[in-house]
Amino acid sequence: MMEPRRKFLQKMGLMAGAFSAASLFEQAHAAEWEQASRRISHMSAGEAAMDEDFWMTIQQAYTVNSNLIILNNGGVSPSPRVVQDAVERYNRFTNEGPSYYMWRILDQGREPLRQKLALLAGCSEEEIAINRNSTEALNTVIFGMDLQPGDEVIGTLQDYPNMIQAWRQRALRDKIKYTQISFDFPIESDKEIVAAFEKAITAKTKVIHVTHVINWVGQVLPVAKIARMAHQRGIEVIVDGAHSFGLIDFKIPDLECDYFGTSLHKFLSAPIGSGMLWIKKEKIEKIWPLTCNDKPRSGDIRKFETLGTRSFPIEQGIGEAVNFHNAIGSKRKEERIRYLKNYWALRAKEIPGVTIHTSFKPEYACAIAGVSVNGMTPGELDSALMNQYKIHTVGIVWENISCVRVTPHVYTRLQDLDKLVGALETLAAKKNKSS
Image 1: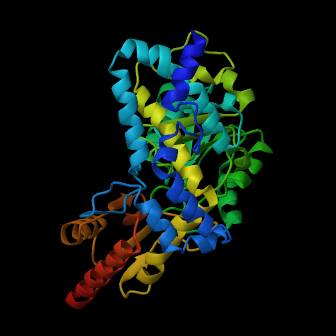
Image 2: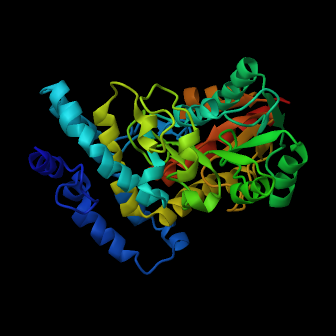
């Protein structure tokens, strides 16, 4: 039985690399992308970031609405056509006989996918669990840790709300202490950020929760330095990597953390509703699964995947997203998206009445930037951009942050960012004139 299944998996592409004959990416893009990549092969990632002919090839692989400028990729990103096609392909096969194709065929494809994600993450495949989003991944750890009444956890007011609510729920249920420190971003000092976490530590601190890239304004935190400081004091570190994985060129072990969760439907452009959990191998055994498992104290990362019936087509579509990402190149992709952020934000900050709330230093920001216009609330600016210019962003009012978040992606065109800058200039001028 195993050999026919293996052949079927190979035919479907579940065991395929980006440039294998079975890959949809290979079938759709091989010749064109090979030529485009060869032309810029002598360039550094930074130089390649400015080559519009190359990125036009990437842009054409997406199916985004040309009548709408999407600049909220920090929420969820569209998938390129090959990823959409993969999901549709697996969905059609599934519906030929769900109980057979889901549980006896597609379920076997999770191991090749786990290997592919582990290679991208730079870790052992025995440390990767595939799930549906960052909230599920991080809630698994937050609710799975053995914490006692009085144990303390340190996070920030600028963390993602679902993570904050998870820790507050644990505090209510289990009487742990949840402490939140606060930052005024942007901050361009690793020392200042690490010192703020260090100052909050007490003798009862057991865990530090760190957001790698702050979703509100794109601030990048020095995770490895925070983790190093925490480990010297016997404290574990959980990292929310929702906005870093598939965007910044790094390997998870480089962060020196103990736990890491991410959404794959953001910058990796995987199918909507896909995510990943990483736990350091020696820590797996002590974390309880969020959903039931027959061996909840085992050291097998797969115990976190007992989700019951879920979308196998979405799960398997992740593989084509990894193929697409790898064909671009992690560093090349990071530099392009940072270039796009700087392209609009550097011009916008020179407009009277416009403020940028994000650093321009590469170690402290990449894709996401916050912008505000004097005299306009975030909601008013967000609405004006959408209603008057068909530019989709998101207004942010959270704790001490008040701005509109703008997030381009690899498919974003320079002329779309030109339109954004022109819109900000017009709106700011109107407000300045009226005041």
